[in-house]
Length: 262
Image 1 (spheres, helix red, strand yellow):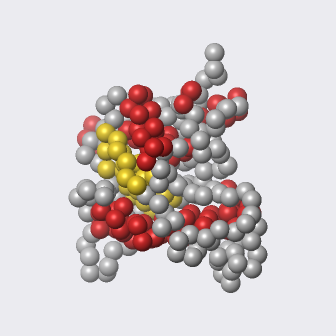
Image 2 (cartoon, rainbow, N blue to C red):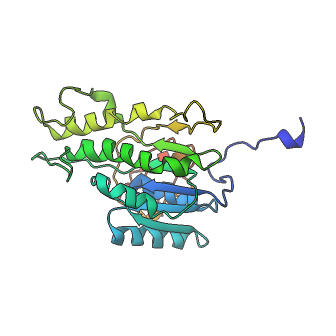
Image 3 (cartoon, rainbow, N blue to C red):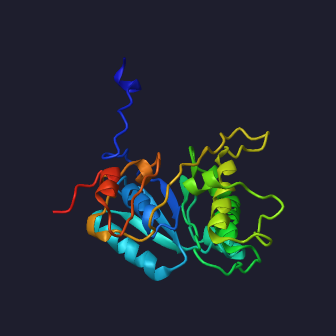
């Protein structure tokens, strides 16, 4: 076998270099999104955190820079519950191309009453599915400009226990927070099909992926970040595992490959 055809084995501890690439992570200021951003920052790529809270985004960027001193990380204001704002959010990226977008942000409400977005959609369905769907449409010109772009949608095991009710997508007749959340996570998986270009286009399609995240806290875990050791939940392959717990149990530490605290 010639050395030119040799591909080194995937090693989550030593990610391939990605200088010149641009990655956008929605909800990149906390939880799984934060760890994705932190690890991708080690590749030399420009990492953009999409966050609706500028203060939390600043705190996340400061944490990433403290762990990855040469990180190229910045933030854009992104509110997936406000569909009319997504065009401006896409423009604020101010890049010529986008090599990957990770659909990570989500809303999970535990208690009634039912809430709606500014556009009149139930807030979990409107944010978790419709917001990302509309954002992707706004980003397609940038994704199409990249030579091998990726769209990654982080799902949830909650989708396994529910089915979409096509006659009540907005949960107006039957609103129960946990059920509505589960249904909102059922909608994104169909986006895991590659959005193909027009038939007349010679450009390759943009592959889409849909790993499942499981149930996890979305608060940062600054005391012992698993960003440089976690599974590929925090990397390009993004087989998400349970990272981000504020008070990680030994089982969670083992899942993230993080040694126990001393």
